[in-house]
Length: 131
Image (cartoon, rainbow, N blue to C red; front, top):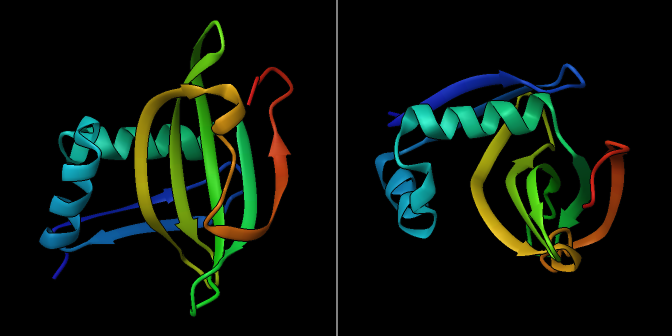
């Protein structure tokens, strides 16, 4: 049984779902306390999926070789740092499954450096983004 679940549509009309058990929710909350509750998590996910600043696609390096999409939503900038939301999605089959979501400040050069994935490529970019 899922503790947190929701359905979304991204800007490309892909169907996405999040289905996390209580243990998975607690794990994400301990790593990313900014998600605070289901409503906040769903809001972050919906915003990043429907209006992303950058979308990248690649494969994870583990034994499962999942296809992964990362949706980045830039919120604001200050000097060399960017405040953004990131949603990581497994996209091997439909509906796509949301693996994680978080929001943070980071130096802009490090935001989209995907070290866990291979052959990571940009597939969409908002012209106004700094990412």
